[in-house]
Image 1 (cartoon, rainbow over the protein chains, first blue to last red):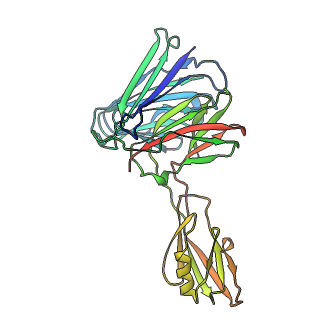
Image 2: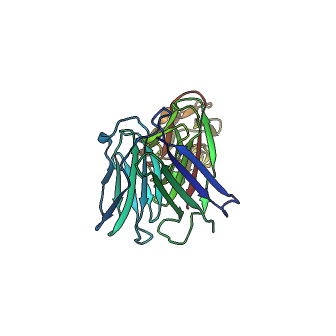
Image 3: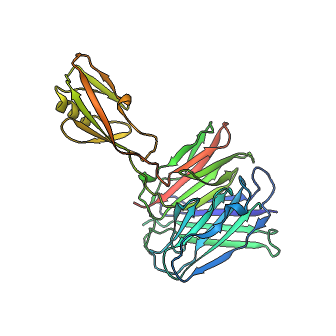
Length: 131
Length: 232
């Protein structure tokens, strides 16, 4: 299995910098074996602002592994609406404003939850995992 | 205005039967604004460590809370078993193994800065001194002058305010491990004039809820590449 993730950051008029790119292969924790399980990309739509939408329930996954979570706020709502991402006991990670995305490691010991701040918001997400 | 575009491509030929290509890209805007881009960055930097001690990479109270900051992290190690544990204060988010990167929004939620009031009591003269936070301050003539001298000094970890015989210390960073009391202040009572102090905690400090903390997995050299793109 070979799954790759490529991150690009283009900053043409930011401190005179050009683009920056990083590519990595998604491997199982501490090995050279590729990740072989995937939840697929799910799309979530909420009619109302909704708290604590569970994306990753830690109890469903092995601890101390190298799972990776992708989330994107696909809403077309107002610019000040957001999807608040939280880890564990509602510890804030950050706010995904419309169009924002994130890609983080998840080690399976803490839940990951999302809260939509307004009506009619949507997001997509997927977890690459080791079971 | 700076234009910053962040993209992610996830691809696999064999994870799913038809192959997978997911590509997304977008300009990084300020919170709640459609047209105004993020315009500050720490730059791409690297930090090497030779210990498994946890350290704070980014202090939340150095950034405005609840904005659209973005954090980039990468483990530059080439040894598959080496990883950094990434935590938000005391909550573990995940492990970055060799070559892995992360890119995520950051709330930078503030904690609470410790506040304590030092009061000069007894009799103080200009031959006395008081040492705190590595700074030795020569006393004034009397408690009010000594308070003024203490407030005028510059400390590595504290700011000062107050009046008369008081010096109110406020921590520069939100931390839970900065409880101060009289035992951390050393009096040099050269005049033997019964120079005394009292110290009272006004506010107990708490770590920032969103401090980004890193724990290397091995004590050999490990290097973390990092950056924050942020707004004021």
